[in-house]
Length: 372
Image 1 (cartoon, rainbow, N blue to C red):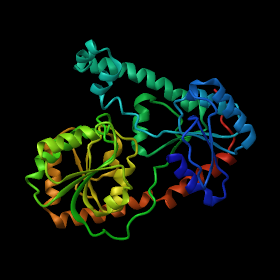
Image 2 (cartoon, rainbow, N blue to C red):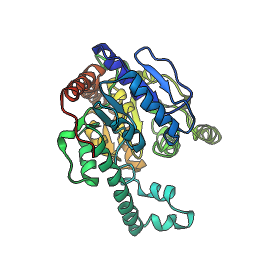
Image 3 (tube, rainbow, N blue to C red):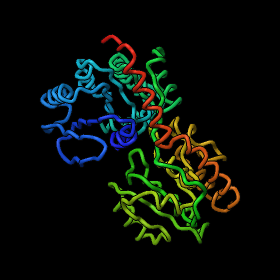
């Protein structure tokens, strides 16, 4: 989706764009770019797909290459062999492990060692291992690409944690984009919205029902909408029905804009995000966000009590209090909704496309960095 959006933003500048995907099926023709799928299953691990990428470069002859998967080092090796500037793009937070070591312990350790991994000592050892491995990946990325594209200033803090010294001139900050911003706060209903993948991992959808159970009795004239699909969806529906939890609707996957437009409050329970488009999209429609302060970008996008509310990570009581404050204070909610529209303006496609165009012009006119 990010790649297609990028092609849509850049095509008005006259660029001819080709996308090479390492999936070998499931592609949809796009009006703003050519989409080429890998010829074999196996993705990057299949050497013949890397050969196909090299052949595609020779056919298409791009002036610039952009890799949305820079951690896949074999792709970088192919791109370095082609004589054009190469850009690597980070699409997530570098702190997804550092800020969620318990989840990292569950994923990376045998079951018998998980309790030890969740202790203070276990956290220290896991973080040291992760930092060493991730630093090696990042140094390789920095050595491979002419520019490393990050979202915003918080990513620089994250990068310095792993790689204290790097060439700041090789880093470019370009955020994700949204189509537009409403000219004024739309008419709102008494609705609270949760929208995303309905999963425990990362999105923490398991907090949806406990949170609404706490709020439903206190907000008898409000509705709660859950939009999205995922592996927890059916279980949450059954639990809500069994418990008779009122005024909660599971909509499944839907077009998001109408929900942002009608909702007064938008909540995010994520334990980490890269650049959360849904948060900015909510702001662009005056849905005031209440989010866990669980990743650096959260406090960069949300100024607490101004264009949204930040609450301590995992603290449902704090999130309940923040939502109650917004739902029972219409004047405050209106003030924050107007501020959210203003803050979202910097992320419109028109503004972000200009940043990409400036970067492309710069790298095409600059000498290429030496291969390391």
